[in-house]
Length: 317
Image 1 (tube, rainbow, N blue to C red):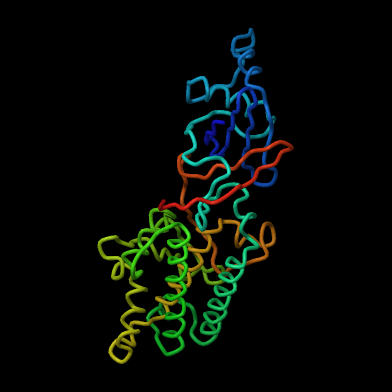
Image 2: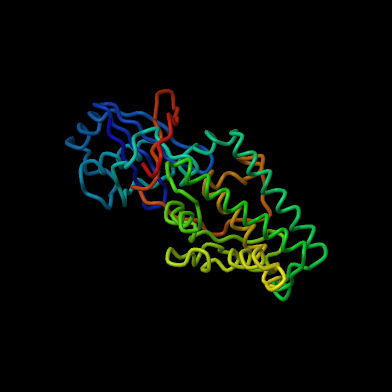
């Protein structure tokens, strides 16, 4: 069985699976995804018949992309059949890596009821509740970003330890081994989830601007390149001398980092309440990574318009 991921000119990601003459296609759409079966021999007959010139144009010219374009065309969906990118899947159909979502179809539904997912969302909710309590005393405004105090320092400490916990779980669940985990290890998650491409805003406080806590995370300097994490370390090791480092701005960035890590692990639908989830966040993601055809996981497309995920593999193995 061969599996291919493709993209159309309208930005839709599709999945094409071929086994002998049986072809199955899955197309992501906002509300009603397309999941249909076709016969490859039907395409071959059409492509050599008198109506072949009526095929819609496609950017790619190889026979496989033209065949996929033909099938997209026959789904009668509103998706443009112009195939602009096509890659053979780097992962076996139905295989995925734990805590790495990349917005593969229905992978969130597969993990949403796991105890770890619920536990981590509850922990995040506790952080945001504490942040909102501080907002009742200190107005979330740009001019107050450097405000500091004991409650802010406590919140920054808990948020950063949660960030460390999530990064550790991603590494451990994917077969990464280390004698003593540190930011030198944690930073290896950066390219896997493209954390630097995420940007979020506070829904109720848009005047605070956007936050991209991992934007300048550096492999060469994994602790100091994260200013909010560096502030946490400074206040942790010398509270008396560095109390002023534990600012409101640092705490907000640390909690934003938790939001981003949860979405990166479980998908953008995690906080999509009430459409796709029971959970909600005080942050909204305004920019997320774009994944290439050779980067997303491929679901197993089955009969009766069903897709499934079979088992996990370890990214580092």
